[in-house]
Length: 189
View 1 (cartoon, rainbow, N blue to C red):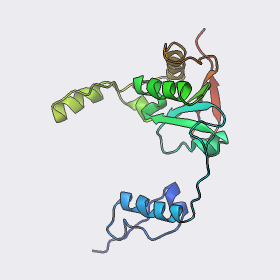
View 2: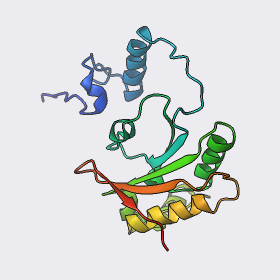
View 3: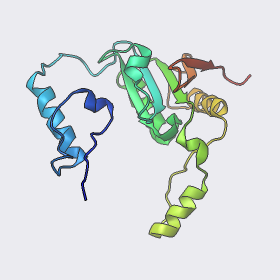
View 4: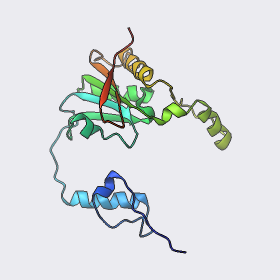
């Protein structure tokens, strides 16, 4: 039997190098090796932890979203907070609170996207996990069927948080994974 090794087709493969995966290594080995190459030419940019544009971007963790490229951002421009669905959870509020109160951000941009995996999940996911591991997760799945409505809900959660002092510049968008364009979602009246 002949085994053919097919290189991974990710953004990381845009930088040709021997693949630890092909040599029996792991994906993490590949990432560590990429870091060594990166660090060899790295120079401290001398930046502060405060984002230059004073903005925090909350987005889905989907691998198809290259937020910096899609939004024209450079290193140091923003805080980026990502999770499954880009939904505003207690932990997102925690990060936004630190971002605003300790590090000076004033604006929040929410980015959901078309074809999100959370549209196909339900809270049954938690029940299935409980059946499998014997413990029910404390967190909610935060699945949704209507991405526009979920953006509105996330905007509302940010706007009404008592911990966030800056809620006048909160805007939400849906990123189209086929065209790369953002579509703005206006809050409910």
